[in-house]
Length: 313
Image (tube, rainbow, N blue to C red; front, side, top):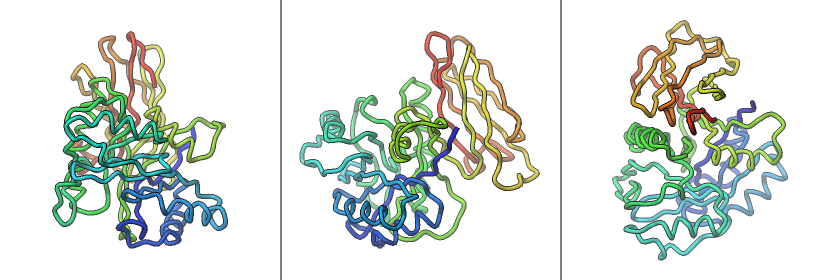
């Protein structure tokens, strides 16, 4: 498997960011991101200069066009969107037609940005206040926004929402987003890696979008792993660690749709196999260090879905 390091939520001076296009691309290259999404608020004006600059100076960086649809009722990330849509068509009491409009306009993956964030300064518009919608029109949820403490406060709620929906059977990827408006201070925060088969066709940007649509993403502070499902069981395989592992307890938790939660101790090297009961329709996999508290969460893996008693990746 190939793990593609991706940053999926960013802003430039073309909207409310402090980073010029060249500064954003330089940051991404310096921090070894392989794929970068362009998601300015309600504009695509940064797309052309960013793609031109990447072609000339950063050929190793694959760009995803996109927009952060910014409304009084929440923010929606539309990856793949190359033109802005009419915001007046959004009815917060019935958002499905607008979400469909995003897909029709070219959005490949539509996601909810920081759904429980109040924003800085306090702004209700950052929190997702859209009413009932069809989850088939949503492809992912930003479960970890690392832009600052105001966003971080809502991350646990966002993760809980995603987990609840997955365990109900909704097919949703989990991602993180730096939500860059300025250069961040160095810190160990969640990063998104998109899992792609070796030899898969397409650019890295295309494979990132494919991974999101296939729910093949991992949100992590370091460890990488993938799941393979076959004959009613799942096998968790860890990627080799880039750095020596600390001498500590690593706990892999498998939360099943039947309400059962199973915890395994792991060395992050040996593959782990888990048998699923026939009643299980989906499962969420999370990795912790020392104890199973949100503060000790290390990674959220790709969800597992099961059909007719047989697990599927």
